[in-house]
Length: 365
Image 1 (cartoon, one colour):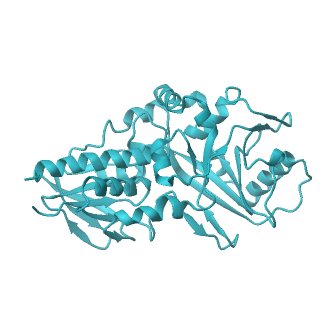
Image 2 (image 1 turned 135 degrees about the horizontal axis):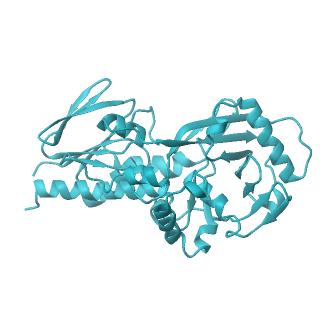
């Protein structure tokens, strides 16, 4: 029986999770992963920042204990912190009530104001997070995203090809027969399948579909001379009544998240950092001094727009009109928030479907 071959386009959480499950279903399968960047990880990676002089995550990524598939990625060594503290910049007070701040939580989960979120998506997320105690237990990477989420999954890849930008797919009789990259073309044989695990923007480009709207996120990393201490010894707090929405302390790095951040994309980075630092000082109860070294990261297409109109356009499953092409990526999980959990589940789903397809073509025995 010929060796089954899987071509995975995209080396983010979805693509790497697909590789893991493919090897679980068939340890003899050959998995080839292609990524447009020079390193795997997609939108989830760590890097050495030349301004801050230390290793940081590309953005603040959170995993709830209720996120079962994402927790498998991080493994049993995950250190979960009790979350749920919110600071109101207007009143200057802390609150522990999740119900009081459900709009702030919705903004974090969906990257949209609660009033604009698709009701089906909101209801499904509510069921996933029940009981709420699991919503309070959150893992935040200590600037180790690549180590714990990405690098360990590369063991399931037989051949990693970076710097591969997929231009188009060629097909014949509803079967993909060639992958056309910027620098090479790869033939897809009868006993082979393709998993397209890229973001919505690139998937629509490759499949020649109308583009889906996206929403930006802005992350600001500050490096301080010593680890900051937030009130009450907290490492993570939500903020309301200002520009900043979330603060996370990871050693000498304090990271700030601005969700639904279209208004900030054109704002000067120095002004953004100064405004964010002023709010941080108010929370700490100190006078604003000089702004420490910072890095502003702007992601114009951070997540799919998770309103009802866009949710209706998301795929119903991982199947496509091509018999040997399957979809993965958080955006492909209809009625799911765009997250690490959705990306991981989509990879598992695509791996299962593609494995079953090859079993039909080459049944055992």
